[in-house]
Amino acid sequence: MLRRFRDHSRDLKRTWKKRFIFSKESVGLQDIPNPCEHDSTFIGPAPTLSTKPVKDRSADPLGITVLYEPQAQHTADIIFVHGLGGSSLQTWSKDGDPNLRWPQQWLPLEPNICEARILTFGYNALFGRRRSGSVADILDFARSLLFEMKYAMDNQSRSIALGKKPLIFVTHSLGGLVFKQAYVQGICSDKFSAIVKNIHAVIFLSTPHHGTKLARSLNWILSISIFGHSSKRYIRELDVNSRTIREITESFRSFIHNLEIFSFYELQPTPITRFISMKIVGKESAKIGCPGEVRAPLDANHHTVCKFSSPQESTYKILNALLQHLVSSYQTAGR
Image 1 (cartoon, rainbow, N blue to C red):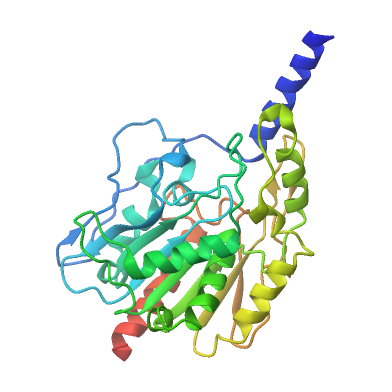
Image 2 (image 1 turned 90 degrees about the vertical axis):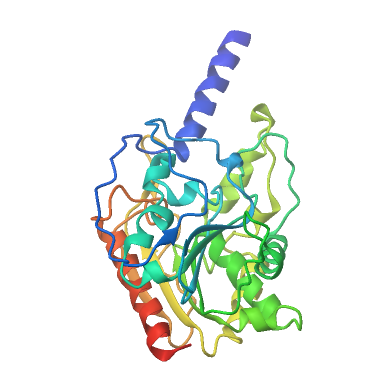
């Protein structure tokens, strides 16, 4: 009986791991000519020549990290915010491969974007940690983002000084909700409003503006004590009937007069188990529903909307073109 129970537990754990682990094939980065004539500096964690991807997401830095900065005066700041179960570096790296970390390895080689500074923000949304019992919620993550935007320093202990140049946010999943909450909190604060008012655009990648049905199931699975995990407050807030999500979205709508909003939704189902796939964020939940919002599909699932094998992938090309357009428009307008 005990042996059967252990075998059953092992099978359950194996199934759970497969929910969020996908293809492990690694594709090498193609050589890309650098269109930037000026020198630049890659400030963040350096890529590695190792063929073994780094899988420990908890080792990724929290707070704001500068990934790339041009030597000349930068024209804009692009900040990446990961989602549920993600981290500041690996969310943007296919198979955890630092050589495929596109915000750091590919974007600095693109026209216009090479003149922008590129940063990433990390917060602890790793739901698979054992016995962590986190009581953090979306508001906590948003406050952390605001604090970092004002007080963060680079690896040379210099102020990052966000808010002096146009800000562009690229957010994935839960990261979009964290951004919206930070925007609402910041715009109403004397201490942070000057920075927040300089946010000109946000790109939402599969953000559940109206929740996801998977949240309740995920928290139930985490509460099974056999794995030593616990449910998370920030996952409960992702439920379709969540009052938190509704209030964040309603408040955000009332403050977005001059903000360019791009909401992308996934077209492909995400593998949940070996035999089951589903869309994590549906088309309707991925839209805010405000005037001026630009909505577009991406031929990807919930995880591959932010991870790519090469710069030739269609989703990367779409995001690259949009970021080039935004940075270029701010250069032209002198904003």
